[in-house]
Image (cartoon, rainbow, N blue to C red):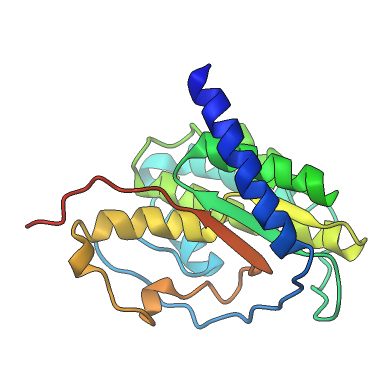
Length: 221
């Protein structure tokens, strides 16, 4: 109970600040050139690479992959709509490691802005989050794939003038993978590295807030 109250109080303070920023900002962020990461942990940079990975794993997981892909395709229940580049309602992403705080902030901000609250994975794929083993590349690919129908849902809402606040998005997934790839802070790629680039085929939020918390990791060999 104390933890819940503490997170709620923190969320209220954060939401107050975010409302000021979100209601006064309508920014367009361009897409960037994708680039695949290599090694044990994979940072998927486009939908094609995700689908190719699923196809490469059909030998042992064909039935599970079929279930996931069927649900994925059913998420696109109508024609897609282009994203307006003019003045419109914002698409805001709330990201971070603390799931409870992230969800609380996202829901409160959506309420304050009169926005629709969305989450990742979207409802059309939510029941499948346990299909693949935790900390596996298949699960990694599943969450990366789920971003695309989430973005589709956001575009549908934006097209009718409804602002969107989404709980979790690409930066959060990228941060997880990068954290696994580089165990020491000093080994992180420099600012401007391709690894921080957004996938070119994924809609970028107008505003992104990453709820960062202190990491007690010791920066040592």
